[in-house]
Amino acid sequence: MSAEAGIRIQYAEGMGEITEAAVKRLLKKIRRGACGHLYLALDPDGESSFLQMDSGNGRIFLAIGEERLEGNRVRWIRYMSHDPRYDGSEEEAPVRAGQERILMRETIRDAGLAAACVEHYIRTGEPWPGMEWMKLDDG
Image (cartoon, rainbow, N blue to C red):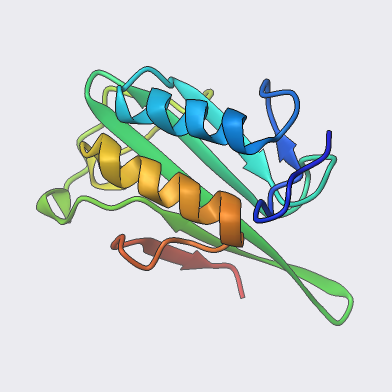
């Protein structure tokens, strides 16, 4: 699977060829709330730095995992979507990421914001600075 110029991702689960036209269709689908699951990665095997999106029942969960090699150690930094209205709450969100339990504070409602985050990641491989991310660092 190859990517066009201006597209950093090299792996898109279930997307086939990563072209501008495919990216435009994907972003439109996200904005409409019709994209239930998405997994993108910066390497062709989908095993290093990634963006994952899961949505349902009006809530959207975004997670970015950055893999960094520091000496002989791999360090992971994880960014997750954030809804500050639920800070301190353990309320579960009505969306799942596989078997993983998702909390309301880790989700957003704004599909336009989710699409902007996904597009920025596709083009830069970085979290979108216009989003308030929760950051977890294993280092």
